[in-house]
Length: 124
Image 1 (cartoon, rainbow, N blue to C red):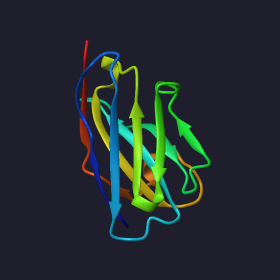
Image 2 (cartoon, rainbow, N blue to C red; image 1 turned 45 degrees about the vertical axis):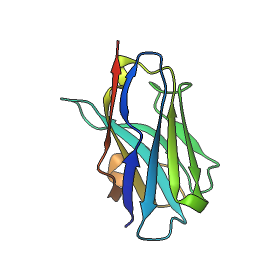
Image 3 (cartoon, one colour; image 1 turned 120 degrees about the vertical axis):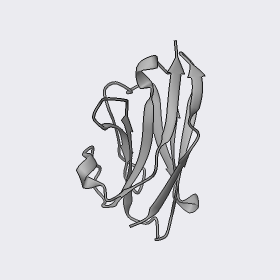
């Protein structure tokens, strides 16, 4: 497993932008698919975005498609989530996840490593 630390959360007005970062450590970043999930109060954890090791394949939840962009810098063991046109419905704790696989997945149970989460609050 790898250790994951998220940062970049905060309070932003609707329509604004935030960029979340997730830094991995502990083992080589090579061959890990990375995902972003979020959990709002009283709701289940839901998939947001994922990216393969090469960065060649990405997947997004329909609710964020066209607004969020996931990317990674393997040299820095970092995955980013650029969030634009934020809405109050995007308010949640955002978690970074990793799994040693070359396949992209949107299922939380497929990921073995998780960060502690970072709070994103979007005010109306």
